[in-house]
Image: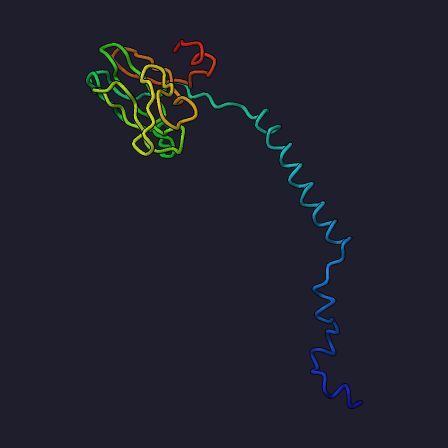
Length: 175
């Protein structure tokens, strides 16, 4: 063996890759990498809306909430549909025969909202947002849109909720 080979460790002779060459990325390789990731993001931006367009909307059907005798006028009750604890709903009895159901998350930052019967508002205590209990529209504060509302159906003193009321109905003042 030559004198130079004795100074090099055995593992380096088996792997003759220099550190500078291993860390070097040419412009061409860099452009290929950036193009690949940009293409992937562009494809995702197209694929997600297409997927959501063809995705079937889930129909809620009728979901039993409780009895009409369970709640006094001005009262509020929180419930969950199909044990999904990520989306709480609140049932409000505004008058003897007037019931409303809203999602109990503020449309600003998803804080829990509460019905205040004395003030006749649904309020978000986090950032002082106020909603109209008749239609869920924003009265004051930072919330950007009305509360999502479910349809209430009363059958023989039993309270059921059905699908969300469509945005078009809310903007026309019906509900």
